Length: 325
Image (cartoon, rainbow, N blue to C red; front, side, top):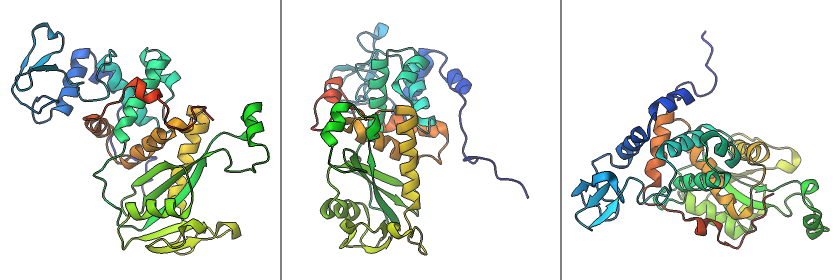
């Protein structure tokens, strides 16, 4: 009997050498991005008009729209707009982000593609826009596993000031940020988001908004899930019950373990302010993990269309701490 190959052997990957051969020049990278963004033919990203023409010398931009009488490029209407970083480097950054299971740090990206660390950090957050909220997401049919986890550093590694703030407040989840997640067993898809409360209303709303009414929900014994308007079974972790028939949360807990290994081993510090972007990155990459690498890259670029992220918006206060932990 032949042994099963390691990893996801059914999918076709890309080596770094193949990626460099795909994008030997800026012209080749531009052509690839245009083939993805304008799969059905070039059109203006501002008004949708197909009556466009090339601009001599590509200044100020390579194309002109006759409809809205404005210049545009393949970057227009995406988070890459206003970026002076070559598209070759954007393509390589997308590849590295997708193929690094535990993500890629801005320090490594800055060394790998030759941009400043600040530019690499901003690039990665703009790429994460591809996995932002999607209004078109359909509820899961189930069965689903639901669980919450807490992200934050160990208290012994915190500054003296932070430890004094937390003194006498307990242990475990205190001082950390809560994240709720759900895994659909039928499709292997994951959804996760940062939450500010772990009360019944918050957890049950998440479950009911993301599942069909006849879906079966499996959770741990947390009291906040009691009363959820779905068929519901819970396992009792405090008494070492982790699996009872079909009732368990092992799938979503496996997802949490990958996120936490990335936190500890790659990213090192994640501030509550930006945590939701990292959570959505891992959920988004998990959901396309069975696709070929080139398909993942194309899907990521397509999902960037119509999104934008300005640096001032990225660093603006959102009410959460900017201190990494």
